[in-house]
Image 1 (cartoon, helix red, strand yellow):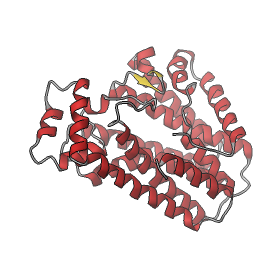
Image 2 (tube, helix red, strand yellow):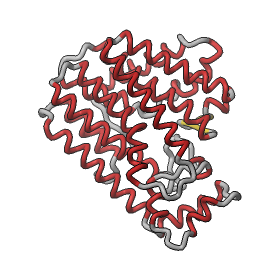
Image 3 (cartoon, helix red, strand yellow):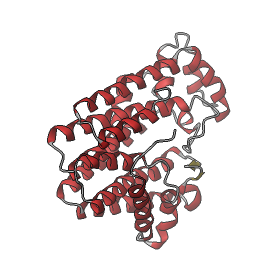
Length: 315
């Protein structure tokens, strides 16, 4: 998915800022953190922040620093995710724990979280408070993710709440901070926060759908979630429609291996899981777009509309 953005120069500055911040980490932890920060991915969360900052006259340096800070939170969470998930790759390269070991990756994640906290504190108490609350909620979401492992009866509503507490919340943070730095009115801050939350949920559901496509190229780990019993929206929908229990027995088998994903994908498709998840993603995408209705016409609304459209295939 190619995400357009009209603020290319600030985005380049965000990348530069991230590399500079990585260099400030303690030397033993730099390799693990740099493995992800140097492969900056789509920078979706900074893009959202930069877009929302166009609601007013945000100060350029603060905006770039805030955008980099939000990405630091995301990278720190990925460092820990990959250790928990035992993921071998991330963003087209070896994951940090493969390169440096699990202990170094966990410590690097803590250091990056701390670095984000220092950046947030420099940006003011409001930014620091919002960032701290987001980090705490993300940690809680990670715990819920571990606790739901191998739950073949997990309600879709619980899954949505889980991804909302992780992906959705970080999208929301970027949107909220961008609007606040632009000194946007409270109702506009609320609108973009709702937009970010809904878009994040839609994005995660679509990401789960991509795992059902063996040919997808996203840079994220593949096949590890099902091995660990972490089932996304398509699989959960299929499990709820799995009257004979064939899919559940396959997923719960002690002998389940990555090669079994071929059979899993076929069963999920047969039971309508992919179509149902696509529809759910569209519903959340529609909610995101509806949240923009109250925004004034202008560059911020245009950028957010472009970003959202690029994330929804066929939109």
